[in-house]
Length: 445
Image (cartoon, rainbow, N blue to C red; front, side, top):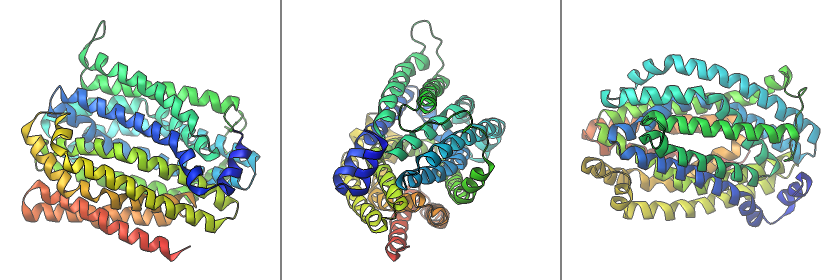
């Protein structure tokens, strides 16, 4: 489907039908990616709780640095969707090229800084001695592939901006399939390959991301998927960079501070032992599975809201957001109920450690039950980001994590002297932040 035809459907077609049409491939892409993460967790669980915990201990720091760049990518996405909504395709292409080159330059810096700081940061996070070396090696390998991961994310953002959600889905099938095949081979040393353990999982992830990035670059340069930029477009555009930084800086700061908050949360959870953190790490993988659906719908909403704002159709944009909230509330309530009721067998599929399974029952009871509320919160912040209101989304994000989650988790964990107090604080933060975000959204802007 051409960019113009997709644009007309987004601006004038039935909301629910268009939303699900765009969201379908995004949901599949997210599901495939999450399925890989679950498989990754499954294989590492065969090695032990320390190995299973390594990626979970590493990602808060990786995400902290990556979030800086992702904030600017979100701003670029907002510009490109609105240019397309306004039917200014030339500026959309120029903006896409400038965003791609900026992301590449920024990611190289992230890779270098991240590699140097990793040992210090893991110690500050109070990662247990049994997990530390695994987490260190995993993180260093991931940072070597960060430029590829960044540019692949930008590629998917740009295709979402024009309404093409199918191409990233097919690339995701290919790269995740490759990742899934490489995982057991490199972790356990099958065939001629050496046994690399946790490092093998990191290499599989890094290599697959690199392949996806190269495929994405080919499509963007050849213009076969609606967005095309030339070598001239890739040159530094300081005026566009200034606009990206102006709009994207609040989002970048907000996302990186949120990711940093999860580093603090990791330290809080580790105080109650590796079993508590292992249960939390598995819970994160499971919640990602549910959010593969919810986020796919929210991402499709972002494309629709952005193009409608660009075309000046503000009331339609608001209706799209409201209906997306109701849909995601239903999706997350159903998924959460299943995991909470069957938490024993679900968590037991990944690890047979009784201490971890006991912690899992507490995570399900006190934290996972709050996820439908977080679905409301994520839709609201997505709307503000797509509209270019990044200061609002930053404020809401920081309030949720630093104003509610971390203080509540630390205080309740300390008061009750047990891990379930931490999980309860996390759950309460989702409920309260959803209420605040919804009130802010309904005020209108």
